Length: 152
Ligand code: SF4
Image (cartoon, rainbow, N blue to C red; front, top):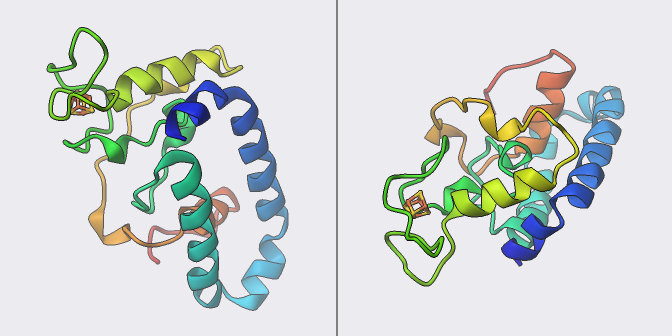
């Protein structure tokens, strides 16, 4: 499924942006309900959807929008800023020869995006393992409306 998502990166990214825009609009309601209270159910839905589409590993700091919808957490080395030096000539992973290198997929997916900026070129911050298992969607909404922090 993850290869399918990369092949359809353009359409899925548009849908994803739409869902994000709706969630941002819902911020007043979400705040009223309470982000802490929403964390568990939203994370459950997010895990299911992103797990199905991207083999997401629920790191809580989703960057698939910048990686052509290829989840970098599927890289055995968990590299978030490009491939290691061991990618095989056929595009397979150095560690597991039967899987595609996530960064080869990321480049393919990125080329399908509308943006001429190539978001894959943005440098990603180091992963914060304390956020694993929390909702990246809710964190993104709060960061978009400027109400927040990386705290769960
Ligand atoms: S080949 Fe690609 S997926 Fe495999 S370890 Fe290196 S960067 Fe990660």
